[in-house]
Length: 256
Image: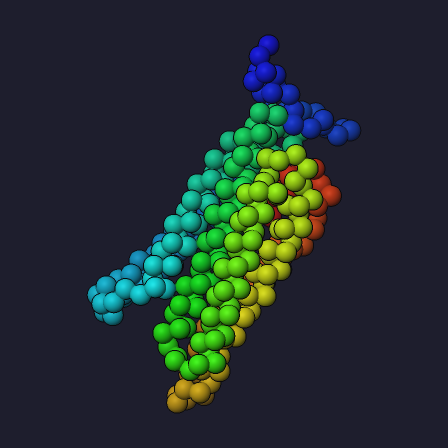
């Protein structure tokens, strides 16, 4: 029997007591994941189309924030495609129901999935900051934008180096590095989600408009705090994943 045939028939980990290896096992997580991808990406595409229509037909000017949001949208699409391919390699299954060959292919895609996801999130923040930059020329306001932009870009470059080098998922022994990196990344995302929401509030408060309208604008910005809440939930899931070798199922639960 060839090496590939052996890997295709050998489970990635031994089945625990009371369980049996079943390569044909199916769970609900891939279907939930696919459904959430279709709905969320459809809505993202719809809102992006409305924005681009406004940019081309009404404003008639293409700015940096438009380009950044298109880039974030494209990376999100790439992430969705990669995760759909991961389903064929056991994503959402218990690891003892995944062949060693599937697990090896899954690990090869884990790095690209992490990179496309994290960069899409960071670039979306940069798009917001680019928009803020256009609405106020105050020096301190712009210094805050520049400092936040450099910080986001800096930590994203650092994580890119880690996840494609020392913490590359296919490397043996990268598990602890990946777990610590994932927790640090989520915490930084929470912090900078909040910072990006807070930056324009002084400018909004200084606008000469009725208090009710100012409150409405702040409330709309506050909807972005939902991203921080989602990130906080991810911290909890990552902490649960640390001591579990059953990565495909754990990760599917976190993404679903």
